[in-house]
Length: 143
Image (cartoon, rainbow, N blue to C red):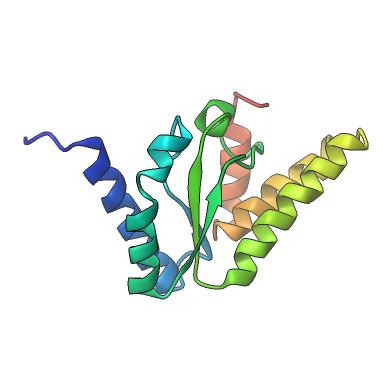
């Protein structure tokens, strides 16, 4: 099998996610996380072209939303691009970030409140309740 370079692979992932966002299959989609801001920024022009092609919007993520939905190593200290058809969904994503931070500052980011943040993130990603529960239960690498 012919080896694919990382840049082309990431562009293909972004294209596919933009297509499913446009089709309404997902409200929100994330590109694959990048280890550096520079790497992520190398995709921004292409990501913008994709958004124009599909009628989507993007949010440039410098501080990934960490929840119990995914292993922490997947997104901690990573940089990403978030795609959505409706800009209100990007606003909800940012608001979720803010809510989590306020819970942390108030010493209330635990139990039901912590799970609620993960569940709401899962809903923004258009995961079913069953899928969200399965991902949370399987995650052994919490923040």
